[in-house]
Length: 152
Image (cartoon, rainbow, N blue to C red; front, side):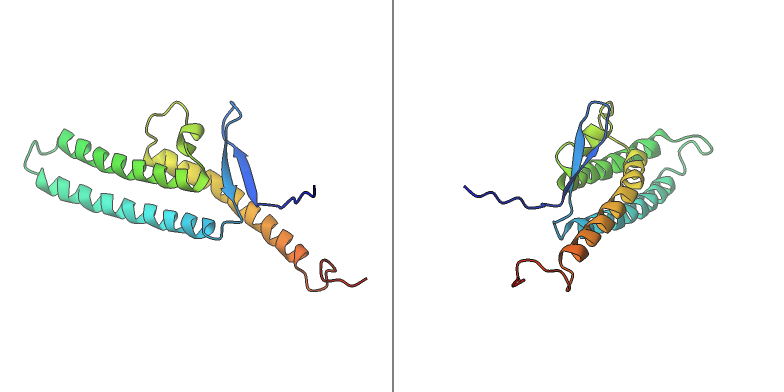
């Protein structure tokens, strides 16, 4: 029986001391588009939360002026949790199920700061993987390469 071995473009990134990893499928043409969309989405959600927080501050401005208002904190925290849960689900779709749980095993629901930290840490790796993939493609499909079409 013949065997066919194909480079699927799947990369693994170890994310904790337990040897757990997340995956990046560089052969999926939508990966980098989805990653870019996620970054734009996170930026838009931050603006949305900032605007909502201003509305809440106006709404509760008359209650205990000059003091910390627990209602503003609670409602803002609920907005962040909703966004972070959705971001975690999006990251699971991109890097494999349980991505945030593997990266932050002791955190039940990673906050905005931890998600941003993850994105900041993974971005240079993605750039490196993309450069390696481009080099691989350029080498493999170079016009001067003799491969399957050569007639030696």
